[in-house]
Length: 370
Image (cartoon, rainbow, N blue to C red):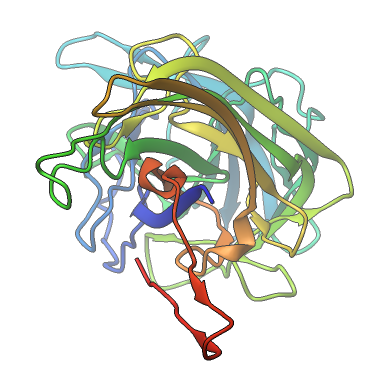
């Protein structure tokens, strides 16, 4: 009987954390240009220090309010922000310039990657009826062949001037991941039986040929809410409104599969499947979702070559399918989680065993546990 031992571990919470301090803003200088301070959360409880790639752009919406005008009016409408190597470097609108108003304040909501079409499903749809306290990713589909990293920022409230937070001067723009990330590692539990049979050593070569994930929900809606504080400038986080209480998307019934085909010979050191190839099963973005019984699965095609002490060589191919909900170390695939599954194959289970039974003299059953 072959043995396939499946170990599951959460490698880390990818770029998540919180900012609790409220920072007072100084009175803006007249005609000061609006710039941005950009970062992503890192896996710790401290403040963010992970740089946003300077080669990427992002989009932003800004809303203006002052004491003389009721409500918030649009000030920056899906403006593309890019890094500009001016002086020590600034993040500013790709085209044109925007300046801080001398009265009132601005609220900012940013996202990435930038899309010029505000109606695109990859652009968060901001609700203006509740003073921009709700946004949705509506019916977004993860492209199995080319998934992207969706990011949304904390809401920057009551901003009146550029300030320093993450090595830049400007609007505090702290991004969170809207999707989850999947990684697959592989290893062999053993490659010979020298520990148990030092004088009769059998060797094994284990090769994983293909890994496929199936029944993965790939379309859904994410609804996030926050509150508008009025105690000075701050950055407020968003809260997922999913009915389950988990930080996942409300998925549709649409599913997808993803396959990686690499003949990878296993060692006893865990490595990413496909490590060093263009099809590595690493940092693969997926829709955050509840793991359901007999829904999301993984199929592993692998081959074991057995070399016995007397020189016999045998090759056998196997296929194993497991459901992700069978491994309680990971309850669900949640937003911002960097999830690693390690597949451990034990070739020793393919050795011929015996289950003797003595009959005719006296009925005695013998069981040998190995």
